[in-house]
Every structure is written in C-alpha cells, then in structure tokens.
Image (cartoon, rainbow, N blue to C red; front, side):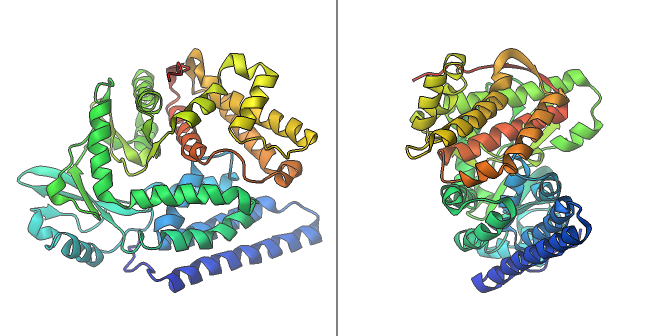
Length: 434
C-alpha cells in the first residue's frame, strides 16, 4: 500500500477535502437519479457502491476522526448499506500508512531522539495503519516491541472535522440533525480521549489488572519510559490478528474457546466493572498459543449506573413481555418522547421491541450458536427495513441516550466477531446489581 508523505492538518485544507467529497456524493446522486429516470431501474445499489468508495478514499487520506467514524460505522450493519460496511471496514487497520520521515519527526518532538537511537532495530514501514495512529515493530536487547505512533494533527482537528462530516453523514444516511448531535458529541469525547496515549496507557494497565483473572485472556506489558502523549510502546505480541485466525483456523473447539474468552472479557467489563473496551474490531485482538490477547485500550467507555439499569432492564423477560412496563421504560430511557402521537408510540414501540429482541436473544438462553446465519440475516433485514422506512425517517428526532452508542456498537461488534468464529458460547443474561 502506498505510503502518505503528509496529512492535511489545517482546517481549510481538511474542510476542502471533506466538502469536495460531499460534492462528489451530490454528483453521484444526480447521476444515478437520472439513470433511474431514463431506465426505470432502481440504481440505489450502484449509488452506494460509488459513494462508499469516494467517501473512504477521502477519509483515509485525512485519517483522524473521519476515518475513525468510518471504522465505527462499518461495525454496525443495521446502520449502513453493505457497500459502506465493506468499504469502511478497511479503516480497521489497512489505511495508507505515513512515511518514515514523518515518524522520525514525531519521535524527535515527543522523545527527543529518532527511533534508531532508542531501539536496536525499528521497522521503517508500518506493520499496521489505522485511523488514529500506526504501529511499527522494534527490538532492543533482544526484546520485541510494538510502537504506536499517532498521526500528526489528528487530535487538533477532531471538532472541526466532525462539524464538516455531519452534513455528509446526514445526506448519506438520512439522519436528522437533532438525532445526530448528541451522538457526535459522544464520538468527539471518546475520540479526544483516544488521542491521549498517556490516558490509554493508564487505562490499559488498570483494565488489564482488573480483567487478568478471566481464563484464556492475556495482555501485553506497557513501557511508560518509551511512551508519551503521542507515542505508546508495549511488548510485541506474536500470533495472528483475529481475522487472520478466522481465515486459517479449522479447529472449531479452539474457535469456541476464543469466542468464550471474548464473551467473558466483555461480560466482566460491562456488568462488573461498568468500564469497557469499546472497540471490538479484529485488529485489536491476536490469538497466540491458543489464548486471546487484547492489544488496544484506546477507546474505553464508562457506563453511568442509572443508564446501565435502564438499558439492561429492557432485556428482562418480565418487563419485555409486559407492554405497559416496557413502554414506561422506553419513556424513561428517552426512546419515546412526551409529544409523540399515539400512532408514533405504536410504531416506535414495535420497532424498539424488535430491536431489543434481536440484541438480547443471545442473553436469553444458556448457550447461543453465533454460527447460526439466520440470526445475522434477521439483523441485516431489520437494518434494511428500518433504514428504508419513510414513517420512521419522519420520526428521526433526538431519541435515547448517547451512552447507548458505544454500548450498542460494542455488542454488535462482539456478535460479529463471535459470528466470524462460528462460536457456540455460554451467554446468560446478567443479574442487575445496584
């Protein structure tokens, strides 16, 4: 993959790139709308194919928050048509890396020395490049290190980038401004934290210590003396990133074991710690010696107690099957609003009931087979139907709690990983504790 020698850092340059992408989306829309008028054929799929490629090309050059947003969106198949999921999933760890001179420049500003003076060897080419930073392999005194280096300028451009991405996202995905604003604020807060590698190091060590008792889970050692606000150094973990393991593994017993470790890891963090690793894409995990290694704690989410109880109470069978209690809880959590009409309440209650049923289904039995393709077809069908429902679009105002954004994203990401493993997992519903 061709390296980048620079990233647009100034607001004007980044705004110009994003505005140009928005203009190309508009041109694509007019082109495919015209083709439909002439031929009578639905060209929506062609429009999405062309637009997904255009959007990802721009986001990958800018890196930072646009690319991170693409990565996040690719994990929720209920939100995006398949072309966007397929294209944006490249953001997980295969974005074009930065050239070595820019890496050296970051080392000089952060640690005062170039990498070849701090390490015996340092790979000039990145081993992985994603949205916020890229990883290089280094050695010193026979020890292997993974060194994550943040892209220049991404921390300073988060707010302005998201402001420019907002109308593009609204156009592409038919989102209402009032609906998207609380979520963009949540994304901005998490991204701001994610660009602070000092905070990531602190959280990595803390959460690793609080989760070390989980069978089959391992964490790399971090090295504070070789880490700064923009550079993070940890032990190099051998093995395969999770999607490589998906492709190669033929041992279903081992796949089930890895899937169970994933589930237990998230179950413990969400329901016991209420602070969790909120970035479950394959590039953040490796399998080595039949154990699951957690590589990255950049994106972490804390759950307020009140929200936690409201959210998971929706999955309680006694509440779920009691219409009045279920509707009352939807009002409490902000999914139904006081000024909703009776017809809107009926429509939304039906949609939220189906959504809760799908999300909570793995919790409702002792074990769940994530290799069951029919479950994921139901998820995809639900996403398609709700996305194209004109009545729902008209009700697309600010609903729910922004705290749900990363929790939903984490569970659907976890489900997709378990599905790729075809894993059968012990998945009981949590006991809600005060």
